[in-house]
Length: 131
Image (cartoon, rainbow, N blue to C red; front, top):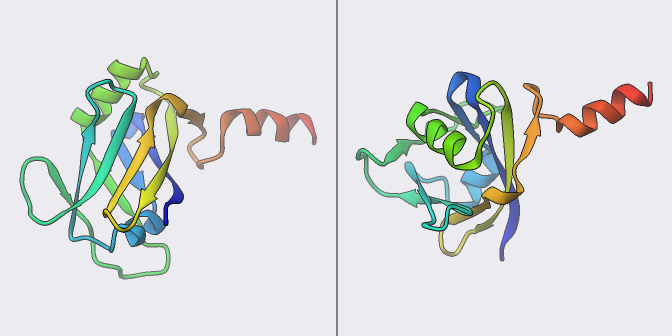
């Protein structure tokens, strides 16, 4: 059964944050890789079985706050260029995980700008306004 998920891009540090729930939905793979659809509107993260130039190693679970942070300047640059993102900002992309296929599909057209602590920028403005 598909489940909602997210992925975050922190462009200033060329960092990609994958949530542990997403990794669990993919069966806690040893490696993952990203594939951007040719139309540029979606991206797939898939469980992968080997280390190569396209894959990223998933660390073993070792603590409660465990997640995956990938440092990839090339992937962040591709996203910035294609989506006209500001290189000093951070973005969160919604997606859907398909556990039976061991993939998560992210809708690149639905990216929202977030603060460094992961909250949406528009929510920050509302929080400040309501104080």
